[in-house]
Image (tube, rainbow, N blue to C red; front, top):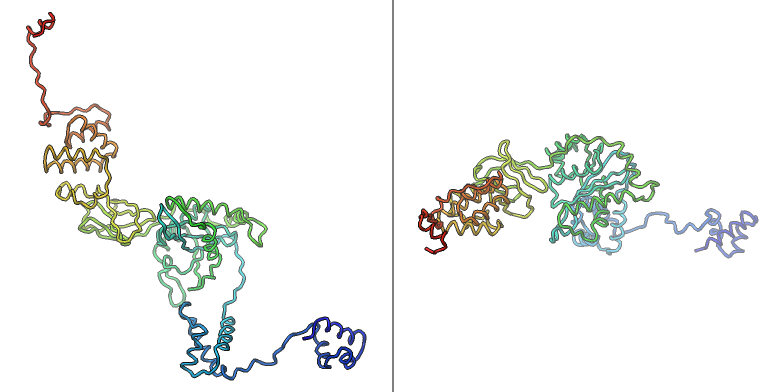
Length: 499
């Protein structure tokens, strides 16, 4: 191939010096047709194909390959044909006799031409994008999968992130509450993928049927919703990029925290620190551009949305209510009743009618049981035989004085002592544990072992009055005998003579 320096000399000789093309071919030792090409192109044009390459072995099978690639578009990405698999099918099913290399070259070129090309977008102030991501972290010494809620403001690139134990409806709603509280305002619109937390169904015309909870959230904060095309993550590319940024920067090295609250405090600090960054192509920091975003936002409502999932339930014969695979206890008086379950990120609240009858810390373990021992004491007062095997009381760590009181009650009264001990435990339904413990300690110290005495001492402690116990109800105590003093003994005492 002739170099560009030869091109320059030949073109100068013919077009400036005025020699003929024949003379230039003779002088530079090249073909006259090469001289003509040099006069047409200022630099070597490279190899130019006059027509598409001929593939006599592959061309009859091109239509089959195109059909396979077309059908692959509607299949999962991990279950599509490789070039090798296409070659094997052509060979085994259609009698192809060529090599695999030409098949690979054709498939690669075809796929490149089919790849989607995107239009650069501008992002006006006042809008947001939301998504969930996953990462590993250590919470309270246990390695867990973290599900983090991410909100991105495309105009300013400001972000907000919070981690939750699971990607649930209540986490979705609580993430919005926390994000709006962080920014102090509500975006005009939010773009989502077609998560089932927000979209119950996509109708034939593309219309989204919202879930009840998402409709409530939207009505509470009055933002517009937008949804990307199914399976097209690039429609919300800003937040998709943010999820990767969070995973690579905020969560590396693997985070370790005593609780989710502690981890989320750290993540909020990371979001605040990022406001000082200036990204490529921008003359302002993220925080500087956030001012324009917030100016376009709407104001917050007076109170946050009640971020919970509501479900109807029924209390079982064991006084348990099941929510997301975990059984939670309620007072035994509500057995077999219809209840309303409200599941929050960190607690489960159970109501019957207008009354809240139980409140538990949320458990994310599979097939777990969450008991409140106080819920079963009224029933155990009637069925004292189940006291030692009652599962709700297992793991209930009470001060040692409770066990001491039980031993003394049973030693004094036998089997009825169990019932009195349960009655003492039921004082915890009404009074503070510290007051009940103080009453038990004083009862043991005074030797007045019984429910009535403990209750009296607890009330005296609360009302700040001295106790007045009738010891005649405790016949096992030693009785003191007080006799009338004689005059002779008194006179002997005065004279110093022992009687």
